[in-house]
Image (cartoon, rainbow, N blue to C red):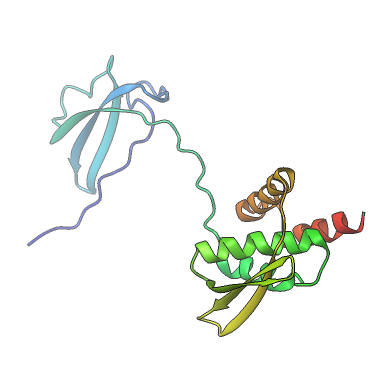
Length: 178
């Protein structure tokens, strides 16, 4: 009969001297059987476990550097709500942001490009949201390099959660009115 057990995690410090390991430090990990289960003790290479205790296993390891904080997953529902909230006939900055959001949602397969239509000198892209039954017509604005950078920065702030959606919307409308 198999017994479930979890490998105890590293404490990040030497069990003998209470010295915290630095990223990249080599150490030895020892696994001991105790009445309460398994106990893991990590020792720097200069220290060793007490002589009277026999570990059931040991291995050499390196203390890992703390990982960078994970980026928050993109909340496509929030991005879709922002996309819908931006008027198709709004100020130029809002139309540009709406176009970039449409591209993002298209990439995430929330929107599906159905066709493009040329009306005079203006190109419009038609998107369907199959899971919602919505259809959207999005103007493809001429974007200069600076505008692409500005919109990318807005999206990065939005996606990372650094700026609330309302701030992005007011920034888009505020810039247009300035």
